[in-house]
Image (cartoon, rainbow, N blue to C red; front, side):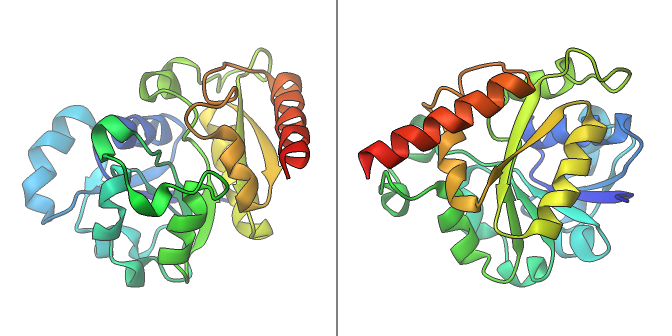
Length: 218
């Protein structure tokens, strides 16, 4: 059972994830790109209740790590500190912010596959990328299983995927396994899933249709 998570990045997505985790009863430590004292005041204001630490210290005893930095900065995170860790890749490629990143230019390769190659020893799960930062808190339904929004996740690591399934459920969403990490391309920016609010049945249908489209295009 998850008890403690670390969130790397305290922008809008990272802060929303951290607040939602705190509301779900988790112990949360957040980290920015520099020293803990550099973000301590900001964290106190926007994520009250979260601990603040340097990235290496934040992940050291976390059950799960959420990486929520801008995608063009993902290489600023030392892969060594994530070795062996369950890592949620919540990042997206936004050209207006990230620019046209050459390593993410192949339309047949998902961004999380590139991220996983860099964090080669981490246990990567793609999740929390196809929901707006404000919706993470607004759409959470911790008090009821009825009317929950579905969120997909994808991973090549079954145990890591199970932990993220638990996390999404505790956040107040219906977790839906999309399958291997490569399938995560089905809920990246510009896809139907990315731009829709779906329940569990709708998510499974959308994933099935994405798989059919991919097979036809192959």
